Structure formats: structure tokens, C-alpha cells
Length: 474
Image (tube, rainbow, N blue to C red):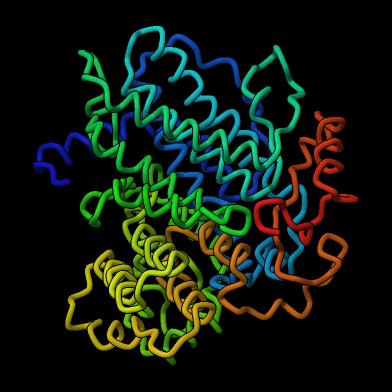
């Protein structure tokens, strides 16, 4: 989808105006600073046009903030050089790690924004606002469930009426996310209503059809998350992928600003916590060995600290897709393989995904043609070997914008074949495996211990550690 230059000028102005106060708060997550006391019930009575930009910004921030960086470390694309990043590299990922994400980024952040949007949009008869909010809410709930396992949903977001919500099963979270996405598709398919979203929609300017395409893409993603649990996951995903966007130009891009206030969270981290995080040397050397033309976009030659300004995904004004066409293409290649498509068709789809990864960074086709012609080939591979090949290519293609999906791919397929950190055996990860989940934040143990312990018991865990597999990925 293309817009006029005036649209983008207005969009940037709106982004800066709406988000400077939001990011002053949520940027605290990037540094793991002390907790900020936020009343999750205080955002009432605002105009829909003011709440939507907050929800979109929180969503984009969560996608690139602390959980994403830690997933990148776990998946051996980053490695720590100093501070907490060294601990994370050694699988010492404690219960304080995601306090800020859970409290101010997730529940009192985007989920509360969406809850207010949904209720107020229903009162005002604004189906498009409600639909967009349900897309964001579904994505945030499903992503959080992929991180932790069971999480609160049914009793969440009630403020002072219920400060100790019970946990819902991971299976229920995924089911509910799919229901929300279906509801969003229905709402966004209604006739437009005066006063609906416009420039306050920082991604599509209120274009309902584009949001419907995003909902279908997310449905495919979350069906494939359950590929180990649902034998029809690939078939369901293919049905959704036939209805989603088909190019980079149509994907839901969130554009950060070239300043130190409303800049990309990955750039912000590099500036606020310099010299603590490196590109993983093995990851970089593997790309170099494969003559991968993306290597120079991902890392400097001497593995300089993450946040170096000339790296593609580390710029202040990096554009982060909520779900990329790159991922859509890879999901389709995997689903086609799983449903018995001819290998030549799977190869053609994989080629689209790899090329989209290169195009996303503005590379010229002649600069990547040789790499793609080799990387797309799966001739002579068994189905399992072909799946491994697709996951390996996704590992390199998703870098910078979808660390969480790389980790999920690994947990549900076992690929790419990574060797756990040999010093990763500790009290939080006694088996020494690559972590399979994140620990619940300590704030839950302090304020909601009965429900937390019930959730741990319900999942068959003795204590809830990093190597306790969750239902979706067992």
C-alpha cells in the first residue's frame, strides 16, 4: 500500500506528538530500571484517536524491547559483553528480567490501551477502532503466552476490582487470540462509520482492508505456533495466508523517529546501555562463510557493540513490521511442505521469502542473486531435512525484527540445530538446555502468589524454570 508524501509527513508529526510522553515511560524497560508505579485503571475518558496511537506504539515497543533482545541472545544471534547481557548469555534469566515488560509494557500498557479502546469503541459505535484493538490484543496475548506459558486473561485488566487475576491455560490463550482475530476481521469488514480511525492509525491511516490482511497473517502465525499440537495447523495456516498481504509494501510497518525520544527500542538500548551487547560471533561467521550478503547489514566486521548507527536494524528511525511479508512467505513455505506440495513449489515460495528479506533492507537483486539461487534449493532433501533448511533460512531472514518468532520456531521444530551454551547449567536452568520459556516476573510472586503457584502446578512444573517446556512446544 502506497501513500502520498504529505501523508507520511503528517504521520511522522502525529507519531512524535502522540508518543513523546509514552516513550519517556516505556523506555525504562530497555534499561531494566526500577519499577514505575502505574495505576492500570487511570486511562479512562480519552478520545479514541488519542488511545489508538498509544496502543500501536506500545505494541511496536514491546516487539523490540527486552523480551526480544533476550530471545535474540538465547537464539545465539546476540551475546552479552557486560552487565545483565552476560547473565542472559549464560542462561541466568531471573524473575526480575521481565517485570517492566509484564507490568508496564503488557498488562498496564498495550493490553489496557486495547481494553479501553474496545469498550469505548463499542459504546461509540466505532467498529474499526474495536477491530484494530482486537488485532493488537490478540497478538500481545498470544506472544506473551509463547514466552511464559499460562497467563492471566479472563480475569485480567480489571484494575482495583481484581488485583490478583487467575491464570488461563496457554491453550486457552491461543484459542482466544484466534477468536479475537476472527472478531476483528468481522468488525473491519463492516461499512465505515464517520469519525473512524485516520491519521491516528500510525500504520495504515485507517485502511480497514489492510488491517484485515494483518489479522489473517497473525492467524496463520499462531496456527503454526501450535504445529506440534494440531495436525491441521499447516492446512489452517495456508487458508489464512491466501487472504493476507502479498508484498513488503503492504506489511504493517511502524516507523520510529530519528531522535533519542521516539526512536527505535533497539537503537535506544545501544545508546543507553552501550558496550554491553555484541552480535554473536558464531552467527556472524556463519553468515560470512555462506557469503550471505546481509552480513554487513547485521554486523560490523569486528562484531562491534549492538547499537552501531550504520547497522540496518539499529538506526533511530528503523521501521519495524508488526508482522513482515518475510515471515508470511516463510510460513507459507513451511505450511506447503507440511501439506505435501511439490518440492519445486516449496522452493519457489522459499525463494520469495529470502528475496523479501534482502529487499526489505534495500538491496539490489544483482547483489543477492547468487546467494538466493543456492539457498532456495532443497533438491534431494527429505521432508525433515527440508523443514530444517527452511528454519535455518528463517533464522537469518528474521534477524532484527522477529527474534521472538525465531525462538518459537526453534522450540516447535528443533531448528536451527544450535549447541547450548556449555556454561548454561544453573539453578534456573538445571538441565543446561537452551531455555524453553521465560520465568514469571517476581512481581507476580509478590502480589499474586496463590494464582501463580496454581498455574505452575497446573502446567506440571515443580518450580517453573527456564527448562520447563510449555504445552504448545512439548
